[in-house]
Image (cartoon, rainbow, N blue to C red; front, side):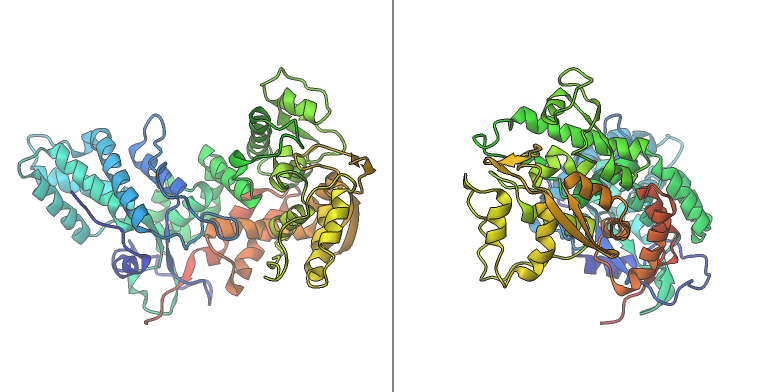
Length: 537
């Protein structure tokens, strides 16, 4: 049976305005301007989390394993321009059927009806409960009536279990499930600054922290109208930050922010890098994964510790690669002190290898990585007339000399004046992330400089650069911006400077620069809970 097909967000706007849940407390807006009302498609992680929040299986279900890959904007897959192609619509339909098969059994106590109670009464109660949980808002009587008609149609000639299965499938096939709304109350009118509804605030807060629907405590706060209070929002944000779901969500942020999501497909020339192997790739990725999780769980998401830690979590293979003494048997991860030539995640082999070429290091990639990801400075694409092929490795020059000659073009000089001094400072590490002082029999020059708000700072080697960045106000401004882009799912606009100021203030209030504090600053901001309603066409 073919059920509701997913339509475009614009269609959802027409229906969601009339059923966006209970209105806000009636208090006037706290701000005079706000970002635009919108709807946002769930990411794959958010989709799976939403399914698991309703069904609560012993082992979390992964229903999106076959979904089409998500593209990225500004490095993040959480952006609000995610679309539903015909292929994805078919995949969603299949997933909804599979969810319904599981759900009819898991939710059997909710749709099973005692003999003393009319079946339609039980069906209506079941529909209202499941739809309210799944659609993240109180459902209207009209919506319940539509689902009840479906129940009755299927029920002819079948059993209640089949009706329950089709109802669950219909709910999970609906655009109201697949899209989150940020619209405000239906009666607000066009082109007005309004508060989000209490359930929209609860949903926005929960997805910002955990990529999951609001839990019972947050929903209770929404029902009681408490979420207009910044203190109340902070209380729930800090509570949710202590959950494993928040750690997983922040892990995804760090991975996408640093651009290291594609490490599984990393490949290197074995003739140039004999240390490279499947086992090495596994060990280096396991190191970075364990280190990030340690920072998030044990160090409260400290960005400064992430950037300048003098230790890592790695196995004996990586200890040997780093020329340091392992304290654990091969294959076992443990805390490993780093030599002075390494500091934090920027000098992890997995990161250095990611920002390198198949057969050599890449000053350009590494410089662009620091500028774009850590300093939030846009690096424009090169002119179309420029040859983008990197220079071939040779055996009588260093990589620095080759790239300096390659980029010594007046057309490129503007960008490379900023890029190259950063990238050249990484030249104490080869394309696999191995420390070196000599290349092709020639001394390596790893001197560089980075332009910051307080001036141009010279450095030698990636470790020194990492320590500079860990104390730089430029990074202190950039990280909250990157987190804003990830959580809000869009690029920043002029109106967002207020919310960003709140994030940056909270982020810098603690010397550790904790990611959770930046999120608290965001959800406390009045701009987080206000939107400008859409104007008539």
